[in-house]
Image 1 (cartoon, rainbow, N blue to C red):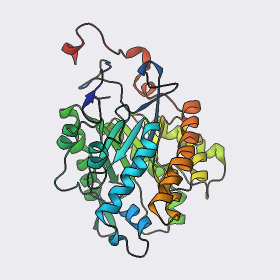
Image 2 (cartoon, rainbow, N blue to C red):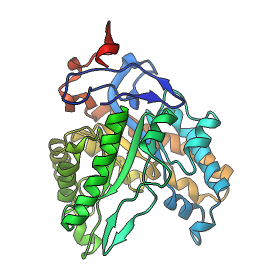
Image 3 (cartoon, rainbow, N blue to C red):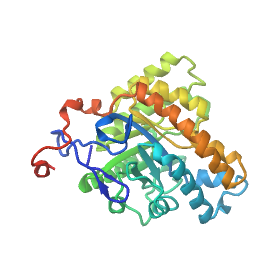
Length: 351
């Protein structure tokens, strides 16, 4: 794990392990059970995503998402962050609407690791295939200058795509990994699978294999944490033991710690997926809409934020309890906690 810092450029001490090309260091966005003291580090991730752009605009104005103004988006980002970020070990924001207001208005706590998205919302189409585009005017270097803990890249990926599509997406991931390595910044990669020339229902039957094959392809490229889709669909695979076996397969396939994403699932469904994923080797979760989306059934900003401050916090705590109970510590993927050191005399030479 690369070097780390808290939002607002508050730096923390690195941890080291001898490893080719880079050092393994404690990520800033792992959870601290029983308080904020790093001595209580449990090695689990309990992270919240609030980097939604197009999907959030659609929640605010279902009939015309483009009607959502900058001021509306900013107000929602500030309100949700103020309510939830103090509870999370890491918090993911976007450059366009979220990260600057939350830092400038001091609603992002210093102990909560800041993750910032790199990609443009949506995707470029090439035939029926999807290409990820980096946000114009934004970069890994700017994420580092911001004082963030990590850069996050959403990458659309189907291992069965034509070679030129796969190569393009791999090149995007590799370029970001190289920049993060150069700048000593943690890299969180979020592959998203999708069907081509088949129905969603047909795709659901082999989605687990697609997610696992994607982890095999992308996790060796220099990423630090894999933000993964749940490997399977409970609707087509109702047997919980089979779903857990899929998670165990994913844990064996990935070269780095993985956390499960929510993809907008209903909370009660996602809670079950988090439990299954953590029992199957996940190191926690990085979830957004499953935690707070029901707030937008309300019509006013005040009512929406009241939901987030109450039920949204309860939703998060239920997921965090599962991660504390079942998740696999991130250092297990790198050989165990005993290989890590907080600091030692002359640490700066090795760093």
